[in-house]
Length: 586
Image 1: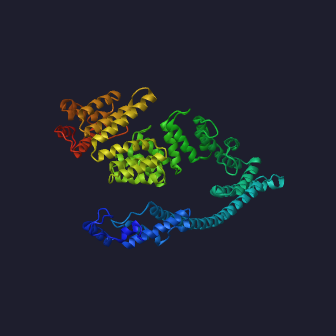
Image 2: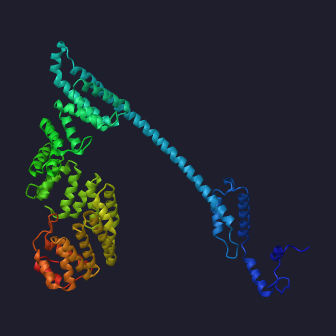
């Protein structure tokens, strides 16, 4: 009996021509012998063993308990990876079996990690809950003591019998002081009180208000406005604040001013807000009321005439009481609003406010140092102040930090950090940051010397800007002109001087008095070889500040532009002549 053909082929190697075996002969036999000697039988045995296990797993419905585990998975993967050249490839079933084993092991490991994390989280939550319970217990005790004091003092305040009236009058001042201290305790801890304690506080204020106590009325109005212990209700808040104000309580007056100023529970009305702020300031010299009066007069509108002198007067009164209005006093001096522009005084007031932790003042100081207003220009100090303001959440400061990182002013140029700060500011709703994010790829392309790409991106953005302005205003205007001016700047570096000149003329037609546009017009004319025209433009504005917002002199800006050109390898013989005529050195 002869063996099966497949087995026979494995057992016999013919070194002669065997008629029953096509292609047999010495050469073929020798090749088959070499192949047999090189065969990795251990690998083939593993092939068979893994295939057997995979087949059992597959026929059994692929249950997880028949998969490989632990080190067996790593060994199987290593086996598949070291397949000899002449060995059969692992089958699809092999690979499915190994992959499923790995996935199941990862799933088990993930489940174990989740269990550990859940256990750790549960422990942390338990510890936190224990700490919170202890904290709440302390707060509740403090609050209940304060509420008890209020209840007792309210009783003392309203002793009306003839026998006790004289004693109550003599003790009124002492009682009032204790009452204020108790209320301060409540307002310090109120945000952490539970509902039950808040309801007790509310009940005490309600009792006091029902008996005609103005302080209780004002506090009751504040509780309704903030929704402490009950649903937020501005109508009731206004009702109780009005009752407190009728009794001469400055807090009720201040609340009413704030609600009319913001339009909370009432139609926004700056005239009424000013009226109530004025009453609160007159009644108690309240610094918050003074600050808002300064805002109203400084900004004007909505029934209040703009009056810089009055704004400064109220800011100064608030600042005398140590209020952050110091930063607001810096603004009129920086802008020349109602006073001679004085950057030194602007810095002085901003520094005073910054020392008290005012974030806006910190941002204002950054602007002063970045632009060299009243101080030597210092981008490092500007960045320092912007970072302090940004840490306190000022979106403008975040945007300005992005500008410094994008331009490399005050440190290394870093587009990633610029994007990071722009995104943080944009998340806070800052429109300028969103615009800077849109322009950032243009700056990145130019910074890498890809000037043609930068120009292409800038042209697309300018077209988008013009379309938006036309849709909104019905025609192209200032926004389009500024966007076109950016195109001119990019075209100069891309050495497309004809395009630069054409676009510059269009920008000039839309905004003829803008000196930034005039500077780029002069540059385009110079590089086109129109020396006489460009020189006339370069010399026409000598000694003039660039704009009301940018106090840099024209000649300084031209010198800075020339420096940028030279850095990019863009030069012209006229540049040295113009610098000499303008009195600036390269």
